[in-house]
Image (cartoon, rainbow, N blue to C red; front, side, top):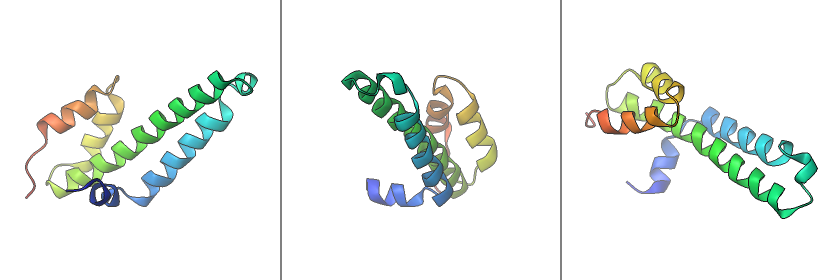
Length: 98
């Protein structure tokens, strides 16, 4: 599967929330440091990480449905377990595609 077909699996609302999270981090965080390059770099990195977090959560939801696993439970576990351990657990414990 190419990255484009994987990105196409992500639901629209997850893409919208991801874009909003990026915008909030990039434009809203560290306004006093925006003039320096460091503020822009921190905003860009934080926005990218926040956006990727929501895109990954959306992918887990759709992928769990494809694999016959309970999607809400796996998405909640992946999002709520700290330090991205939940995401790693999902990818280690997921079933093969039916």
